[in-house]
Length: 193
Image 1: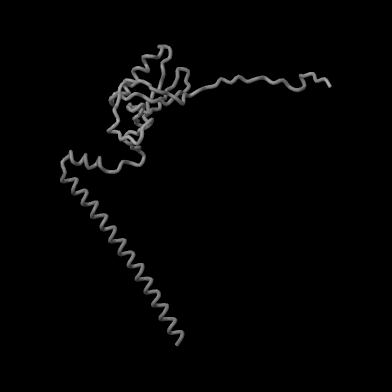
Image 2: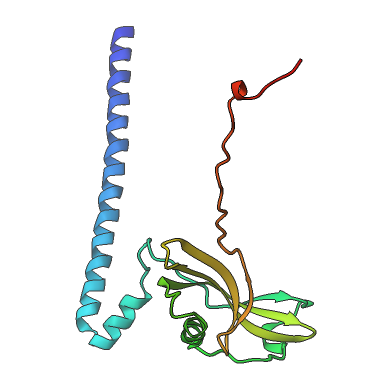
């Protein structure tokens, strides 16, 4: 009798396990079918859209993981007391050609003998610097290039967003020329005791 009870218990457990896994497979299949329907619906919608709407829809989608998206908002730095960007009186305007203005001024100030290679301006962030109650639009950038002798050089700067002129610079690359000192052997010295 005990043997018969164990046998039926074993069969019941196997059936319950089988039903459980079968239920998971069905829910997984249902999710897969739902995902396919959504993908198919998107394809159909793209076919019915005009070319302009298709490009707008594609732009709204997520960008590839490798591309960085920069915030378009400006950080407020300096002497501000909970100021809102819209209430601060500004000393300058934003000129979208500030990079070209800076680059032009940079190359005009160089000697013809000091031509640089691989000149690059990398924008880090956009700022509003508040000083004495008024603000100034600035761009925080990293400027890098290669000197004529082949040494890489870079520095960070705050650039005026209207004129393209440098307001402040820091983190300049420095090269220290180290001369090796010759050390005499101990045997060359005359020690007196």
